[in-house]
Image 1 (cartoon, rainbow, N blue to C red):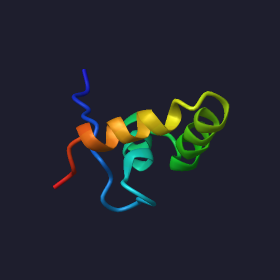
Image 2: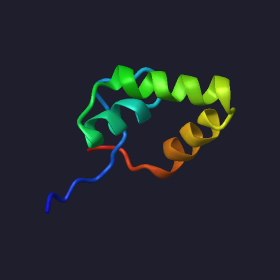
Image 3: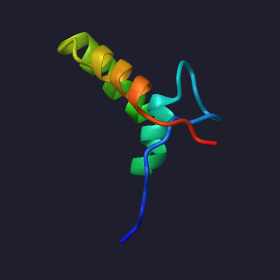
Length: 62
């Protein structure tokens, strides 16, 4: 089993590195994660809350 851990990205970040960190964790393109967050913000309003929670709770990569 692969021991993956979610970290905020320090290299490919636009605001806090949440989307890039999720993209690295799930091994997908960061643009896809950013589009999904944008859709969640516009459609449901929950994307912004989820982004801030991940930003506060996720550790930074050293």
